[in-house]
Image (cartoon, rainbow, N blue to C red):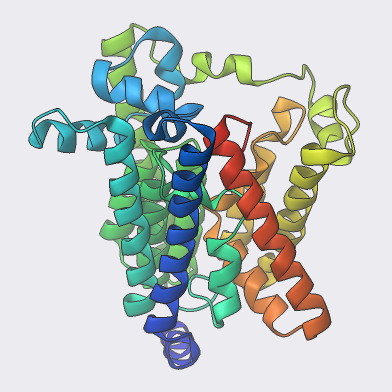
Length: 366
């Protein structure tokens, strides 16, 4: 614990100023919302239509109508939160607009938590480049739009930060809420349990913390199963609804996804860009294992869960919430020569811009 506190103190002294972080965050938000407003005006796309693309449409249905059979694939916490706030406001605010407002608030709360209560790297970046590569990851629009990512980002930070400081019950609460938010919530619980165990003294205490948190996370998952059983008549409704997402039949086919070895995978265009981003996160996860094994494992699990699809269709979106990896990647690039760092920054801006624009006009942007 003393070593962790020393690292935390050192990082707290060297991390970017809060004013700089808020400025960069505001710039990203202005860029994205300004781009959407400009596109709506020049292309004649209604703003609400542009904000309600792809999965946002499903979340809007969940908020306004509740669960219907095809939508059990989406976990309930985010639409419940949006639905509750919408009801308190009289039920007239369009779901996509309220979702954007709340997700933006979650993102700002995340940034404020990292800055004011930040812990050691890689949970808090040491440089402004760490923030840049996080805020401008390809699908960072999902962090402030009508999606579950903003809420999950904040909850996963709560779980990891609490575990980093050895606080069992807050870690358990945040991890349990993550389980109800995204499939990756299970991976947050695993990594949080490992972080807690690392900060315990003695084998018995480590085992107690790991098993204790695992039991509470399992109980949370059991609650999700009970809810689905009562509401849908199927205790595994979300898994059965997600069955159509997989496009391979064997573990070998899933593994071949890594080198574009499946039919339909192509080494060009957006498919290639998603593959490159996936590969960067994979290498970062492997390197991060040396600095924080639990967070490296979290990254690897979050990437591995995409392989049964037979392609990395969702690499941009899944990567957007992997803030420990993106923080670390940005910090690493901060120490690289300017001739490498700045071209990569420009490429990152270009890709983020294209993906954000693509989402609004209805192209697959995840």
